[in-house]
Length: 458
Ligand SMILES: [Zn+2]
Image (cartoon, rainbow, N blue to C red; front, side):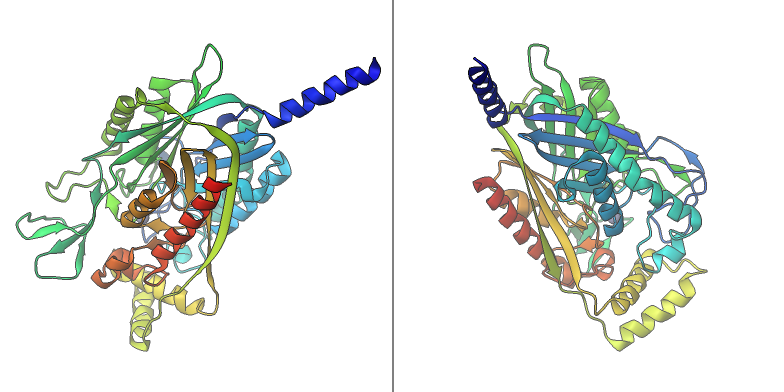
């Protein structure tokens, strides 16, 4: 009798492990910085004055058969490797989720706190001042707390995907003038007769929704994906999550008050909310509402996905650094000496910071991480480590073996701008401030595709 019971119990146990439910949950922890904390987004110091809307670390945890994947998005301008390493250690210690099963990205809000980067920007923005360092020190613990809370809520779910149409919301901010091979950057005047955008935009809004299983199914977590710079609040001293904050709040209010909507920014290195054709500059409230309306329209098209235990794959890629002539280095030193006290313009200042950082780190390999979380037959999430040009994102999505590929940029660290190869000869802001040499973006796409193919086959 006893042995029969044991036998039944062990059989049940085996059945449970083999056919575990796919579970997911979300959580958020506020990360709004204190007054006076140095802000990111510009080449000068701005201390936090007031708070327009709060900032969060938002997390979605997925699990099946004991295999976890955690996706965290921070309402900050970028992630850094030291931050990601510290957060992963804290998550592993507190939540038992392996550090390399964690993806941490940033929305790229330009009205959030800054983080130390180990270059001149730390001096200009005071990122390494006591209040800057104090904020950075609190982040890993808050990230781990959000993962811990999401993990504690894990429950069986069904994931579903829809694609929203965000046409007309984002604009390529690089422009080519007839007869010139050099790109203009964010032109204040656009002449449609002689000018055209230098590249495309990605109008897709990825909408991934996890709904609780059972008779009273309701959305419990949602990942939204769109590629556009959050630069619509402005250069004052007010803290704001920019349009991603408005967008996610509206989607939660409209589709599930208990659901946390998380926004991962896509490959938006060269896409902005400003319409250079008409001069229209939308503010964050309007942009968030437009994206939420487009998501509403897509919601009825949500198609269930066939989930499996999360497959998390990562690889390290060593990218070539750019090289500079002695004349360029000399000029950068001159600009750097004067820009501490004077605004010399975004492009020359960005170039000087980049050149001097590259010279200082020329013997240090530029190693970055590319990561994939696959969790269903139809959909996977890719993490890329910088501000990736939209052309690269479109190419990656097109070549992906998954029907729906979400890309989170500024993830697991950031090396700044990553233009596509065609943009390098056209120059201007993103190119002159890129740490990586021509061809690097395509190397990242290739590395991501390799991981996606492995994840699709296993
Ligand atoms: Zn940017």
